[in-house]
Amino acid sequence: MNVIVCIKQVPDTTNVRINPETNTLVREGVESIINPFDMYAIEEGLRIKEKFGAKVTVLTMGPPQAEAALREAISLGADEAILLSDRAFAGSDTWATSYALSRAIEKIKDFDIILCGKQASDGDTAQVGPGIAAHLDLPQVTYVKKIEEIGDKIIKVERMTEEGFEILEGKLPILLTVVKEINEPRLPSLKGKMRAKQASIIKWTAADVSASGSLLGLNGSPTQVVKIFSPEKRKNGKIFDGDINEAADQIIKGLKGII
Image (cartoon, rainbow, N blue to C red; front, side, top):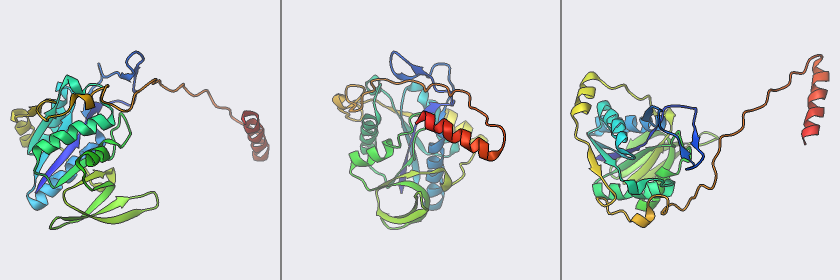
């Protein structure tokens, strides 16, 4: 069995700053980490490896420094890491990104399960995983909270919903996006860290995965960012004193004034 885990390197901060000229995130001077949701995908891949003897390949698209995220994944127990990096990818939206990743996965060829975190902490779109499945014409299940069973070309999972969960069955190969309720990510061992330092990272360009330049980057992205900005800071609130009924009347009058 072969498992591919798609991860993303994201800024390690909640103070997101926007470049007003390029409408992109300011990443300079900000430490980067593996997208927190992807850590659960890595852990689930490793648990499948331990149970079924699977090979776990970690894949990311990003600049050269994204190699650090791949080495961290190897330190946790991943077998192989692939960095998809090329200037042609710059400015790709979620659709162009999922297309590029799908081309890399087609080059890998042999896989049974693709795992992704439910969304990235910097974009919060939850679109790349489903986009990969669409490009590869694969079945998919999103928001997976538990893998119940993996059998002969069949997988059964629990999918989280707003009301509870669903139990779904699908055929392999399949793509799953996972939520944090699925497991508790492990920490790297000293042996794992040493292995990660010496590991060879596979590096592919757009040409290596036969990706069409017209479908990559800003020009190949159907989503165009016209304007992006940080929301205004909230104004100080108002405290209503006195009897609770009087305070309620004041709040109602205040709301009527706003409406």
